[in-house]
Image (cartoon, rainbow, N blue to C red; front, side, top):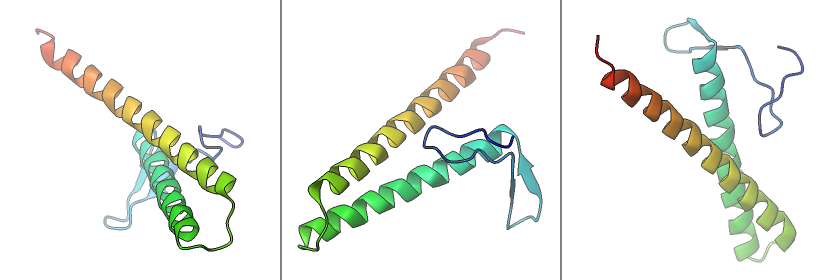
Length: 97
């Protein structure tokens, strides 16, 4: 999977070490977890830039706007993934066996 990038230009990792169990998560769950962590990092980074701008530190307004828009777009994308997963789950639950 070398060279495959996520929507935020972050590499998609096929496996993540689970610190609690010592087991390597792989596949879709690991990719989703990695994407969630990158979205969370972007939101925190945007919050720091907004705070720095509000307190008068030397940071350009364009940096603040870009960081907040990037975090907002990533969050909306993550919510759409969640919505599609819920729709799929609900569809499976409606199936009659």
